[in-house]
Length: 210
Image (cartoon, rainbow, N blue to C red; front, side, top):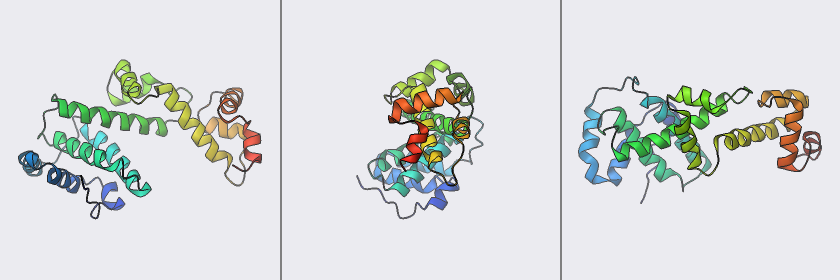
């Protein structure tokens, strides 16, 4: 399968334009051309069914994969973006198996971005993210279980990643500020989790020049 990327600049993706992606996906799947034509003829989506935020999250994933040169992820992301665009325009029934798969991927992508957006909040929880997604807590857990990392593991991994980045910033920030900025409830909690993950205290990690 060959994906054409020449027309997919970060600027185009950031603007939320899925039309070219949909066209390329339909070129890859000619049997779906009628659905593609219907999608392009349909009126613009209002987003009132909640598909637009999922599409935007997957477009952001596509942009990041393209910028990182992650060619292994790009074909699947093109298909998901195309399917979400067609769902948004009414060309694919939301209850169909194809739509449900695209919606699962889109919701997972958006859930991860909501975690990043609210990472500094110690009260960040499955219930909070599920409510923002408009799904049940159980459904949210199922989304993350399919990735091999639970919701809480994903949150902790993001917090550790952000803390590592902040510890390397110049001028150095107080370690307590780093802990609070990453959503750790207390300095003691930050030290415990960080040390268990890195084998070094935050101060030692900074001193080592990582």
